[in-house]
Image (cartoon, rainbow, N blue to C red):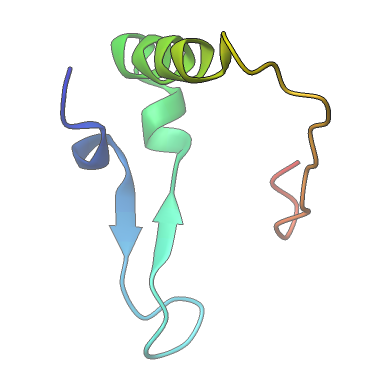
Length: 62
């Protein structure tokens, strides 16, 4: 699954005109796509471990 962008739903002009909302729940519900994202993150950070993870609140997403 090389085109992960196709698994992310784009909602144009939301919440207001000129802003696009990208809904990643469509990616999270796709087992193969979600696995690829995790594998890419692991590969990217295997040699340089993460020291800190910060989660930014996004209107109830977390």
